Image (cartoon, rainbow, N blue to C red; front, side):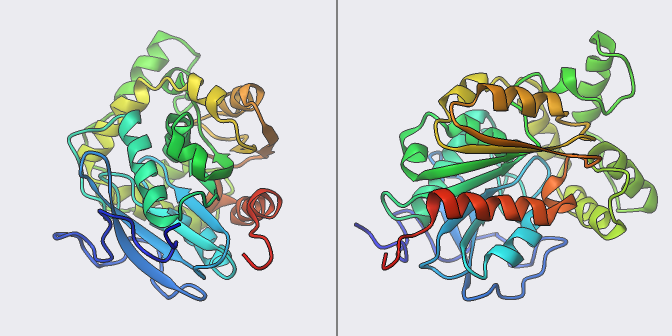
Length: 323
């Protein structure tokens, strides 16, 4: 068995040429407890993925997959907390953060990228709790039937995500459900317009669309800086993938213990999605609905999300003594 400390073939310890070493907006680069490093994983089509590993190398592993228009910076609270006694692996989806864009964007490439990260950071047979927020949750659903995912997934946490019907069931626009709302929502979410600088008006718009009304100003500011940093072409390209999303089969294939979290005020993936997923999962181990919270649950309720991750690790992925 290859040691988890050694990189897999096609895996580099240095950022790829052209990658920035600057921190993502809104996240501190202070060393995590124990150990921290940056790596590059190579996906099936050659796409180079920015990967971060925080915490002790011998600790139980947690893998974090962020959502549309976000980056590893989105997981700052979880990384700070969990890295004290977990090996926390976070990566930038293609086109996001410090992973360069690619011509290929689909649910299959999302699954390819997650497989590449798992193969590069986990030893053969090593299992981790895999956590996905929004498009990160869809990434997990896309990969659920794949052998590499099944080899490495001990348990899963799905935060604020859906499997299908995202545009039709979005409540970002306060209109009655129907063709008009769906058409308008598709064009708004898929807009090519630049988001521009992070202004007070921009933060109010982002809070309305993605967060609960009671979100603390520093949380809104952090999310706005992360989302506004996403290139508009990347945002537009991935909006088409989300518009056509159909991963209901992936829910049925997700056969590891899976917990689900959603905010009751989520306008992008309203609770109807979480309830539908929880009902269809082969091994659902709990649906948590957070009153008044929006779409950005790992930022809005960091203690709840981190606590659920810890519970899943303790129950399903804790390393045996002496391992």
